[in-house]
Image: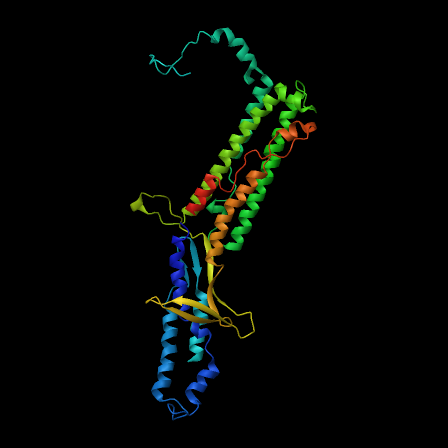
Length: 99
Length: 279
């Protein structure tokens, strides 16, 4: 009985977990990768191309939008009432901050 | 009595010439507890008091009182306080009260200060006490069984019944527990990475590195903790049931009888096993 009712909340958790990487983005490293990368055979320019920078910005922009649309602030499951508001806004803020 | 030959009426009164009821009627009446007005009166008090308790439950499953959904910590506190209060009431208002009533009523006609086990075992007092023990055991059985069933039904009322399987119950409008999605901040400062082996779709093993310093998203409290709490309540009910002692030890105190549960509920008892399986 209990196990069956854990499935839906776990799926919700997994949806948020997809964006866990946002919390662990090393901003300094990201900046370095885009604007101050070492010159090698593959990278002939120190600064990334406009398309590459735009793709990165777009990735976080889309992530922010997706996070805000994963669920309501409070999700009622049969046994559990999940409060997602704080996490949702924190994640979205982080994504926006990186952008 | 089993009648070898089919006798009409099959169910009914069968006269036995060897043990004629009418002949032994007076002896039976005198031996029966109802002939003793004192015991008859006590039985009435005993049953009344016990019936009052059987209507109660170990766990608080009153939704109006609980104000759901609750945080797991609050639910733990609420259930623990309710169980403690029930346990104390059972001991003081039920058991101690019964011991006191029985002693007061029996002290005139019976030797409740008996110190010799042999004499006690042969006395009528032993029979009377055994009778009350059996009644109490029966009430404890019923009380424990109903409490366990009530707890399972309470949890069940928060789940959607599978009507295709013939299940039907009143689904609660509120959830049972409130859980929060939160970010788990790393506590370790060392640059440690955990290696996890994961099987890929084609069956090959893949080693995944999990950074212990990375922030993670999780439920607080963990859903497993919630499940463990629900199951653990069965164990708590079992403990309180086993702590409820027989009356005999306190009725004939001079015999120094050992502690004995009125109704021993073991962990592998069918009620507990069924309840665990259902949860």
